[in-house]
Length: 269
Image 1: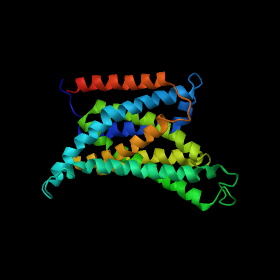
Image 2: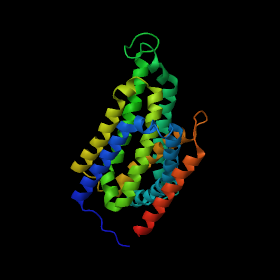
Image 3: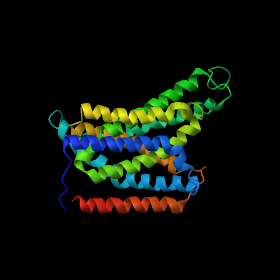
């Protein structure tokens, strides 16, 4: 079935709507996880299953496809080699490593944020180091969010329904990362962290509306970096040994996303 691609102006506004949805999900994450009729372990597991299906069935193939764009762009500069073919995956590995390092810092220092003097900067719980780790962690997630919405316009133009499905997966993924950040930084993050993260999504879209990415190479590299960090964040939140979770709801989310991806793939062919 032939699908009409949105024009540039339409794609920008559609991407803006999707960015707004992501921003609202960021702000509403605690309420979504705390729905009175559905225990958090069910909502978290459902979101996790959906996010894991997205990683294996959508994200990893997208990164592999982006490797072709990198190879074509560099073929005029250097001779193609097996090592060059790993370039896109090195970018993904970089994204994974950056967020893993930040997670380790948070584990060592983030719990001090909950100390009685955390907001004052004095006493054993409120030194400058925890604040520095918090802002470093938050800024990294803000850059991550901005990259997601900066590439959204091109995603909409290349496949509207894939962009919608991407938004659903990332929105529920934000619900999970919100939980981790709130646990690491219970005072600072709850005070203003969600506003900064939601604002970074809007900033990424504004940047794209002013200077939309036209290079598939740039989008491939940004997607690879997003992919590496998403891999870490998904499995950090979804394969926990110390969380109460539901395999049934995890499987429901996984199968639902897989079915939707299959239907959209058939429709957009």
